[in-house]
Image (tube, rainbow, N blue to C red; front, side, top):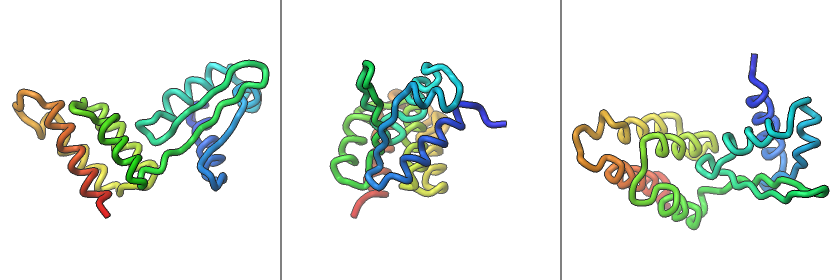
Amino acid sequence: MARLSDIIEDFLKELIDENSESELQIQRNELANKFSCAPSQINYVLTTRFTTDKGYYIESRRGGGGYIVIKRADYKLQDSLVDIINEKIGESITYDGGVLITDGLYQRDLITDREMRLMKAVINDRSLGNISDRNKVRADILKSIILVIFSW
């Protein structure tokens, strides 16, 4: 049986996919009522499943007429690619951070399953061996792979 968080995530992703602008505006309380859960459950799903590493931006406005906007980033745009490389990867990245980025690219159908598995394999600690600054080398490798995949 699927967990409630998974059900809410799938529901929101379907709504985003149906919207031609890759953007969704929701009210947290209404969504909580729909799924008979606490609003904090909605917050949990938004903060863990719709992160920038996974290709989403969240905007929110609090108050009585408040709302939440979920925007899906388009990584195929050159500016977004530069953003991934400079801000998300930076000069150093942990294996877990690299996995989040590769999973996000795969979930958005921007890379294949094979590309995702290869990326994870080459940034794994075992693949990097006894390198003194693994996180820096990992960041350099990940940036190079992304540039090759998205070069046009």
